[in-house]
Length: 93
Image 1 (cartoon, rainbow, N blue to C red):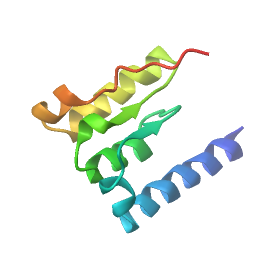
Image 2: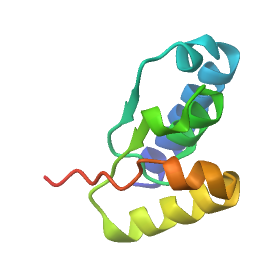
Image 3: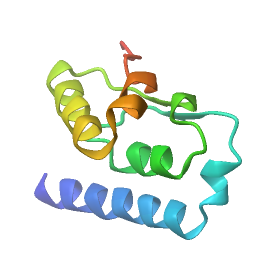
């Protein structure tokens, strides 16, 4: 289990770094949808690189994870950006 979590952390970090290396992937996107955002590393990176935060939708199906995601949005985005962040989308399985 620990190895799996560690592997996923490496994957998420690599995806975020890839977006930073190629910001045009986010800045030219019409919309961005992250399914299963978790704490939001990749989705929040995409939002920071996007020209319009309101085009980025982060989802998760776990209420506790969504609370953590909301805290991460609050920490990393200004009030005006947070108001337009369509993070409220919740994927229910």
